[in-house]
Image (tube, rainbow, N blue to C red; front, side):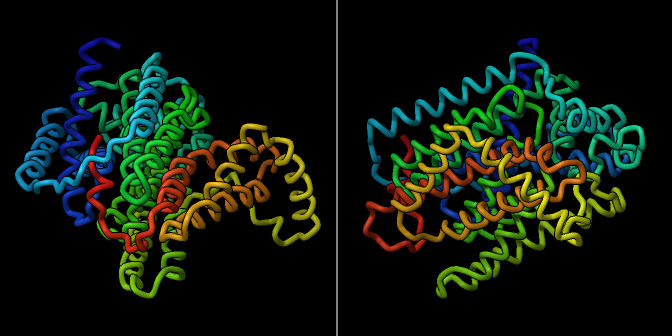
Length: 442
């Protein structure tokens, strides 16, 4: 990658984050500085992809001269509308500072992997990159990415946010460059770590937030070279955003997060439905109206995206799964009987230690509004396992992707657990109010 391409990509990331601040500013939620930065990058990338798609629909050829000015205008609007940030007393803690430094080191290590070479993973070449490159070079969303029988293996049923993000980023920087696209993944990871750090400190404690951020930054099953170019890294950020917006009862943030989640992966639709359903069913009576509002926005946003995607591509059958075993008890039992021993045999020592540690942290924490989102994540993992049973190919083969897809939920789980355990030493009631002391920057 040339120095010019690297600098152009970094400048666009900074500009996109500034533009996203305009969207985030529509929410009245009192987020910390770290959370605001992470949210702004995600919202800015959503804005860039949406503007790019709108220009494609209008028949215009998007490029730097069209995309960059729009981002500049949004960034200027956010600057003019900015509000003074309320600051509390700084909470200095050496251990938390060291953990935050470890998180930063993890982000640097992943960035080096992401930028070391052109994107090469199988799913990037066959799915995400293929679609993004097709959209970029044709200047449209051609019907062949959905209906060409020669590329049916590229999963035409998948949502398009990641390919559109790649194409929009390339259009705004002036060229398609597989190495420069690695910057997107470094930025997605940094945003995830920042939100985990800020939310964990705001809702839990300074140490809990920093510890969770460090664990997320060094979570190698998700943040590794092979994962660059796939949808798991942006989906991990989407899950984190959805969890925080739902816990904060933030309608604007919930809508943005649900749109990013459902537009990134099919699993995002399921996670949105689970989160909305549990918010409706569980929680304190005092926040029933806020929960209903957030649940309605999450469900409506995910549903509207599904309808929009359906209108764009038409009906497409999912070739990976079949419901036929549900009608044959013997076949279903046989599949489960094969899957469970394989699942047990796939449990590594590190994975078992991680599960045990998560359980211990959960038991050590206090009951909080984050619990309902932890339940949504647990049901999501259970749905992934059920999908293995209903695989159209083989349950054991499908199990290979179970751990990778489940790994994308780990940052959200770490964030929610940090909020829960960090509050265990706090004798205050869990009102969900903004705490300026916990939002102070390092």
